[in-house]
Image (cartoon, rainbow, N blue to C red):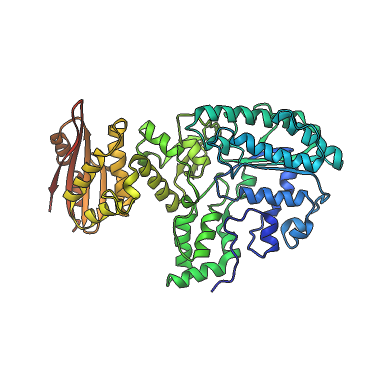
Length: 519
């Protein structure tokens, strides 16, 4: 049994080192960061190690060299003279409260005002921040280090509250605008977040902010490569393998498929999500942990509103400018899905300059589809609901397409009126099939066209064609005339053709369907 101590959810460098938890050494990045510039921005998904990175930098700038014994930074020629550090962490607050951001900033400023002896506390938040920076410099004689963690959480959490969103955006812009005007008092500033700053306008005045998010030199600054994983957690992986009655390599392959796959530059390493892999090794069980830690729903809602067909998300292509030029109000969700970790770089074409984006692993793909389905139909994850998607799995696995379609028709009647549209019907059917735990392919190409959906369950193959406000005959004719089942002529499984027509008019909303068993 592994005796490793796993720092699940721990974000304080000193606690991890002093209490003997496993620390994957990222301190070799300290020197390059210092040489990079004065104002630096890094975008990475949540739960990916940004907070621990800032805590590590804080310990360095405070001169805590004893914590770095045996780590890469300890052997570097670094200046360990302590500097005053202002650390602003936006992770914990509930920003849906009207004054949530102001309360948080007030708390930070009050603490630093007491520490550095500021006496003028009746001014604006922005002015108080300037006073704190100057007071820290005057009291210590050293330039100030400013660390800002998850700067964009006050915006990402409240996209559905436009008045609070606008207010928070103005507050942040005014607050961070001090960084440029107080340049002579600042030694180093490091800002992290999920969304990049280019269109948010919060940092528009800070024209020397260096975004290293897509720089090859910092591709692996957060997250763990497989080499780092094996070097630091071999015993834990072996323990998991023994519990699963597998050899080491088989378990590693399963961990890779579930938690690996994040790539932030074309030259970087494939990276594991630290939070998920730590949870899996500590609990000795492979499960989807990233989404259990609090998944933002704004992207799922945006995709639903725009009528994006879920399978179309995977495999999207865009250029480097699109990946960087993100605004929280942009209609295109794909760049923000990359920045939030739902999509990652799968391929890069140097000739066209295009990146292909895909789900990084099974954990993210399943979790995102599940989140999306909950937005469409909340009852689908309730085990006591007749719409629990595990019941759909039983229907198709046991060769009961009639029961599957009846259940689907009933579910679609439960959708809110405003969600009754073709894209919704197609999306819900696809998500139900995928989350039922059986293989499902959307828009399958054949020699005469492409079917809408094909599901493979047990000894059964189901081929779907969907229509909207047309006729059931059109759906069935297309399935037969284009010979979508032709490729399975030598397959011993039973093949079903299922035509579905979603009907909606002033008086009617229903699903009609026909099922034809070919053998």
